[in-house]
Image (tube, rainbow over all chains, first blue to last red; front, side, top):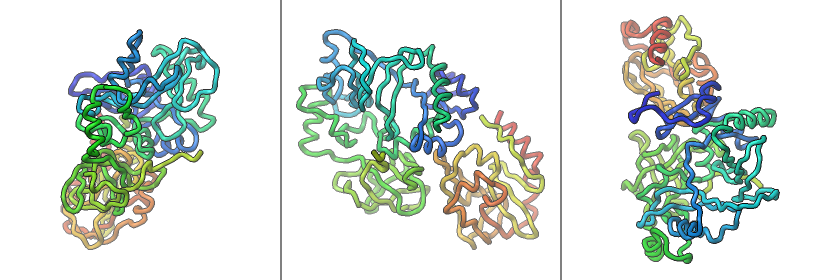
Length: 314
Length: 134
């Protein structure tokens, strides 16, 4: 598939996915599967059994050395000093305006191996099917997820082995389509849609990853001021009252005036509703506020609701 | 890319926008083809005009949405909407399962039978999607 920027980048698994007959698409310059069988089946498999995703297009950076902690503290809004070895933390790489360069997970590595069960937002370095991997209990679906970091040369065998072992238990390989519906139901945000360099961490409602007391970091002054006066707008979840599916970019109108656009929207297969996220002026950002979404020239009624739309039963 | 190697019934007429039309007397039944439903994936929402609305050949008259994409549906011929498949409101996935049967979209009273000449036969449509896929 050609793209304006030249040939698409591939992951260690792209060739396998083509052979499996997955539908491949251009995703930000990468050739990735949008679906293997059906978005709805893959979504359902993750909610009721298991799904396996390739996320190796996402980058990793290792920060090492005596100043590592100090550097990461300066670059991110959350407090890494609270992390013990083997712990992971969701955080923001911030600009000096308190907006997002990206949202990331920071892992604090440990030299010692240990064989404890992995708790949520913890990770271990261990062998998976004979391959030395990092296994983290994190995810992007609203389920109890695991993320495996494997050497690229072993990724194909590992992926195939996990599909083979998981299939009898209902595991399906999953594509970007299901990943998007799953993460949106769980109100997990997507950089480039819900977050970018124009949205602050507080506007996104991620107050829990802004630790203003930890000392200065890039953006901490702007975020301190914003915290005092309150964010001007807030990212809220909504569901449609009228028929129609809200899509990224559709205009939002509150009392007839356009106030923004849908950042993410879909039909939620588990919640069985048309749902979305959008930034609202703070005065109009309360749960229960009614507004309209411009769906191809038609004003469709919607209402702000509490999020996440879907919460896993424990 | 899937080539949509499905069946394309010989007794139907086809459009470049992947609708099919079955003509019975002065009444045409419209749906989307196997290729269209397969390219779209799981269909979760359908928007159709009300019975009594006029539609014009080549113009958009509704939308079919999958989880990921919105696809406009164009009228194969001009006419007046006689009946809409209301069952699709609650089970839009019928279009994926049975695009030429229970997944039909609407029935039209044909305005001008000469418009049928502009539509493709099954063989022409098969050739057209092969070219489009390549």
